[in-house]
Length: 114
Image (cartoon, rainbow, N blue to C red; front, side):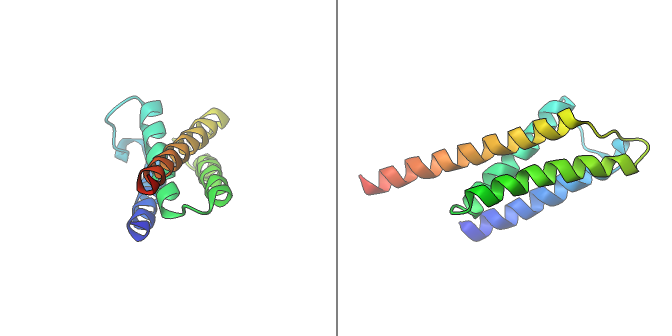
């Protein structure tokens, strides 16, 4: 399960990077941009939580760094915009995904102990 979660986290990182840095017309659209951002980072945080269950601080820092660095890299593309509010939304969504993953693991551990 851990290896699969790490692989999924890597795939999500690649997809998030593509969506963040590609030209706006190449980016997939299925909902409001904020919903898409939040969902992508919730899933990323969830995959990191399952992939690195004993590294809470590191995955939180990694999630925040990915959100911040990818947002800053949008400065290079004249058709894109880098906003602090977008980076904060992405990082918070990632933290929510991490929290959900940790809660699922805690419930799972309780059920196996009982």
